Length: 211
Image (cartoon, rainbow, N blue to C red):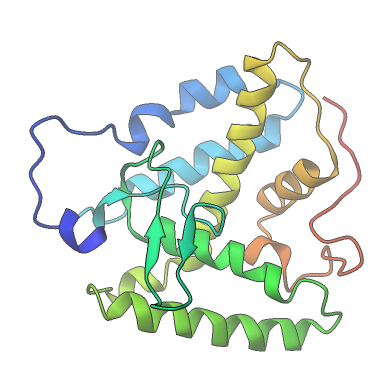
């Protein structure tokens, strides 16, 4: 998909990430009781705006690429990807960062952080081997993996508050959402997976926040 996007000129273009994710939208969506979160999200948008947007790094992405949105035929190795509803124009690294955050599920109950890191390094090397067999990935963009993992947290946080808003519910921050917010507010990289905040007994949970 990324490789085809590099040479594709659509007649009717999909929207861009920045059509939706704006400082104004963040201000409107995120409760006023979370001012630091708002500040960090807006700062993240500013950082993204400064990145190179060449056709080698920026184009059509799936934007929801996870193990619930593809199936594998184990007889042939053929993968079928579906649910392209969220596809938009963004950096290709976002989809790779999404794969990284999904990959932690294979090792999330390992209590040793060094072993978790060793596994994730191996896992992502395998992902990149397959990815680079289909398209080019510049090392300069790969260096931005920690940044785009933070963007996956942004997307998850925004989605959570959108669901509450669309359901007419009062904003509520549960343990999982509190964890993601904490990682952004305290600039904790890699979804906190190698940080003291992470507990292998209760992965990706943190004390509830009041909003």
